[in-house]
Image (cartoon, rainbow over all chains, first blue to last red; front, side):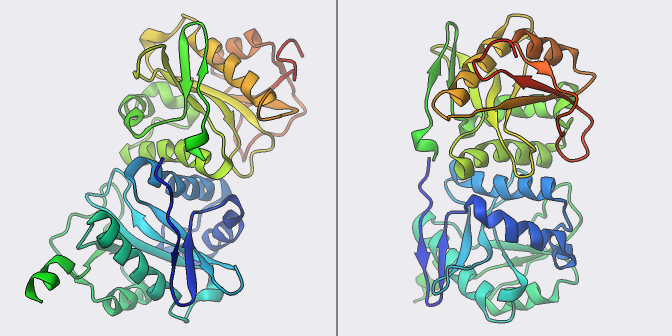
Length: 176
Length: 174
């Protein structure tokens, strides 16, 4: 299978998901904080989603990482390229546990994942699907330079959401 | 990790880790009435998550259900093997046979028996159960043929109504 790469940033390490990550992951999905990410979910359902994200790598050759605090080793959330069959293209998605909120963790992790997608897999400009009302994620998408894309196909069979299109690095390079 | 996933050969079958291409054989099963005893039928997105779950189980646990195919073929017929999602009360030996035309030929038995031997052998399991829907008479018969016996006292996963069959660690009669 595709080896899951490790990416280090200033404060974070993106690494392969592990069984131990499931406890904080499930706690997040049991809470109301997951309401914009298809939650809340019971633990059996949360495991199914958690494990299916781990399976992405073997199926697609890209997938999701656990976000770890480089200094403490704490699990801070998940970031990656989500591409289930009902998505028309890979999505740049993120989730951070409550203690990691408000510190720019999702921004730093998303930027690293987006760069990897472009450099290692030639994927982009990526899309991010965000629920209506998820102002925190909308602000993050905008901070990442993504803009609302009303023409992008939305996930099939799911509630309508917003689609944000990330910058086109190929176009940037052509202009440079 | 999946790179280390073993291959197992039986008289007629080859058991291996799931591959991306197995989706093509899994999807029609998962979306059909045949999947009613494994939580289906599923819509497209749920069917895919179910498949990715099987693959991800290998990534996270280092073992998982094997896909089985006739020897010398890549045409996946079903899955069988060790299965242990979070919150499962005990490690399970699970199986599914995807196409109706493969039924009644002992393929699921052959695959489940070999996968169970792998669990009790190289994986070092001491116990295993199989959770079977009470309406799934085929799987009940298969569990009995495998020598597993009903354990009415055993816990079941989540709020699922199912029968628990307990396997003997020697692979014989409990």
